[in-house]
Length: 159
Image (cartoon, rainbow, N blue to C red):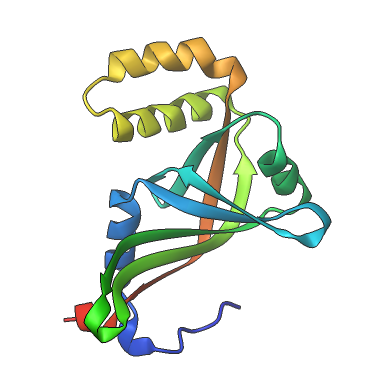
């Protein structure tokens, strides 16, 4: 169903790809937008228990696109070092293909927001809980369920 990587010698292992997802702080979420145009938007996220969570406004381009088509991709760039004298970059990146949905269960929303809060403000769960309580009715939480994860690195970085 998903294409195999052409340059297999640059393929990262599943565990290396997941490590990039765990450690990354931002990526680009791509959806099918208005009139068939791709809609790609930078997003903060957390990778937790094999799923990717985002927070968003309750309405707008993202939520409209998700309601129209639940297929999505998400790309995280871990490394992108320009090597001028070689006319190249030494990079590591991951792309995820899957289905995305809006979480509507309040307990799941709180859980996902708590994991997001811990990632971006570690050790401050009480402050995070207060923020969640304050904004719970005004936030939308998205969940991307990966169907395919592929990591790639410049051949110079493969050991």
